[in-house]
Amino acid sequence: MPNEQINNTLLLEGEKFEDLQLDGLQIIQSDKLYRFTSDSVLLANYVKVKNGDTVIDLGTGSGIIAILVSKKTDAGKIVGVEIQTELADMATRSVSFNKLDDKVKIKNIDLRDAYKVLGNESADIVVCNPPYEKSNQQLGENANIAGCNAELLATLEDFAKSAKQLLKYSGKFYLIIKAKRMSETLCTLSKHGLEPKVITLVVRDKNEEADTVMIEAKKGGSTGVKVTIQKEN
Image (cartoon, rainbow, N blue to C red; front, side):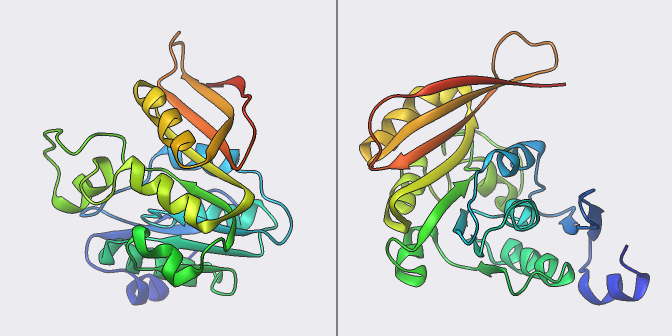
């Protein structure tokens, strides 16, 4: 657990450490910025990574997926891409606190330029938890939070295009999205040569309908998809 002196050094006003309940990992969260949800944890558990793989997390936010994947897998290198400076800074401090600097890097760049900075076809795995809502939604949050909840800074199309540019041939793209946007998502992925291979419907509590969908797509993959169900209590 972090001591008070370390907290005072790393934390800004309105920030605090939260326990990820995994090997002593702590992550910085802010009352003023977007806070990660259980969907990010679901996605981090869903990703299949081979030993030494390079993983890129688009729209990393607080760095939650990058940090969890670094501990849950044998990835060789993980890069979190985040356009919002405050979030990127917060994620960088969380990475440093957890002593993951040798494995996890946070880049404060636009995901549409990621391939220019990180290299074309440089990743084995790309993962993202994109904004769930369209940009025309009326959102009451501050600009930072709204940019994470709705497509104000990047669209689903942007995420798919970036993933295609970054992935090696046969590389995997993992994302989570609201079930209401599944048809649009599948079409967008196929358009960019990311063939959906596994669709996992997430059913929460006692609901009969899936609220959220996780998708595993393969760059240059053949057609044919498997559908699974994951129940969340």
